[in-house]
Length: 103
Image (tube, rainbow, N blue to C red; front, side):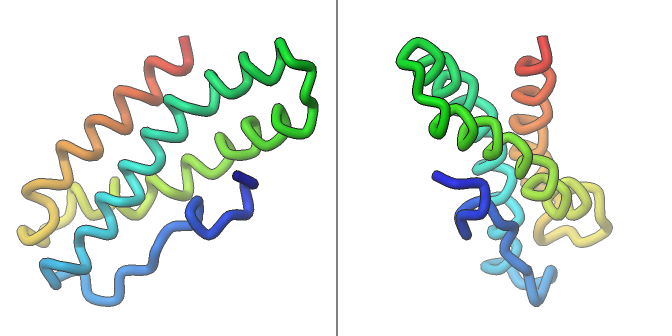
């Protein structure tokens, strides 16, 4: 997957008070956590195989993590109860994954 993939682009939430739309914040956080789990493994596999193009894609995917996380992290600490009361668990997962991937 290339870093420019729509799957690695945050989805704009038009109504943060909408119960259904607020789930898009969680989607971004979940995708970010998944990328942080998968990209290092893909890097290791491609390094062994000597596949430079896939290595570049794996590294590029990681550059999208912050933009995926930002809307969800902001919503998790907002005054909007509809999303903030459950988003904290998705934010926690993404932040824990970020911390563990930096070691």
